[in-house]
Amino acid sequence: MFVHPQVKEQAESLLKVADVLPGSLRWTDTNRSELAAFASYALAFPASFLALVDTYDVLKSGIPNFLAVALALQICGYRPLGIRIDSGDLSYLSLQAREILTTVEAVLGAERARGFGNLSITASNDINEEVLHSLNQHGHSITSFGIGTHLVTCLRQPALGCVYKLVEIDGTPRIKLSEDVQKITIPGRKEAYRLYLKNGEPVVDVMLQVEERPPKQGERILCRHPFISSKRAYVQPAFVERLHKLVWDGSARGVCMNADLGLMASRLRCILTIKSLVGTRSHVSLSALFNSHVLAVRILFSHSSFRADRVDHKY
Image (cartoon, rainbow, N blue to C red; front, side, top):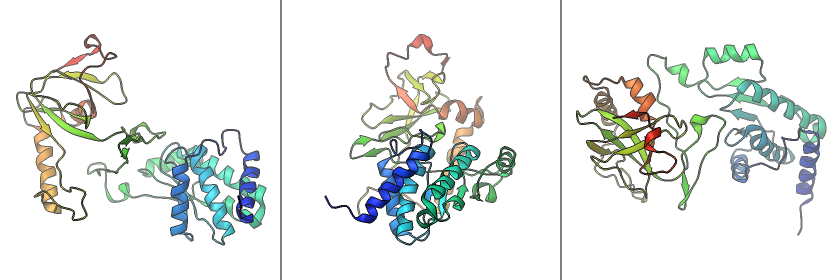
C-alpha cells in the first residue's frame, strides 16, 4: 500500500511525541469518531481550528486526537488556534494540556510544531466570578474564558440549559461518557411520562425505553434515580400523562401535528406547566419535587436487584 511521504512523516512525529509523554497519555485509548469529527472540522475551518477536547476524555482521547489533526494542519500551512475544555477540573486539565503542548513543540521543533506551546486554551461550562476566583487561587493555564449563561442571567432568574445528545444509531443505543456525572446520558430511545396522585398533584416524571410497557393507572410502579441508587420509590399513580408530543414526523416536509411552535405559545405552555407543578395544596415544594423526584427518571417494573423491602419511600 502506498503511503504519502508527508503522512508517513506525520505518523513518525506522533510516535516521537508519544515516547516523551506520560504512560497514560498515548494514542491507545483515543476515540475514532472524535478524530473523524476533528478532521472534518479542520477541513471545513482550517484557519480557525479550535477543538472541544472533553467529549470523551481530555487527556486520553481529546488532546491526542487534537494533536494528530493540528500537526496535519501545520504541514498544510495552517496554524491551529487551540483547544476548549467544557467540563472536569479546569485548573488541572489546563495545566496538563499546556505541559503536553509545550512538550510537543520542544520535541518536534519549530518547523513542525511552531507555537504549539502558546496555543489558546479556552475554558467554559457555566463560568462565573466564583469559578474565576477559584481558578486564580489554584492556578491554571487558561488563556480565554467562554462566559455566556452568567453574563446574561442572574441566580434569581436562572437559565434553563438544554443540549441535544445522541442516544441511538440505527437501533443501537449510544451513551455519552463524561467526568461529570450530570453529563452522562441514558442510552436508547425513550418515552417520558408524568405520574399524578389522586389529588391531581404531579409526583414524578419517569422515562422508559420505547419498547418497554408504559405505566398504567393504579399500577404500583418502582421508580429509581439513574445514578443515585438510594433514590427510589414505589408510586401508584391515579393518572398517567404521556409527555412526548409529536411536532415533526422527520420527513423532508417537516409536518407539524397541529402544534403552535411560536415563541409566545411556547412560553405560555411553559408557564402553565410550571404552575401545574407548583400547586397551592402541594406539600412538596417545586425545588424539592425536582431534586427528589423529577430526577428519578428510570422505571423498573420488576427487577431482582430492587426488592420491595429495600425501598424506603412510598406514595
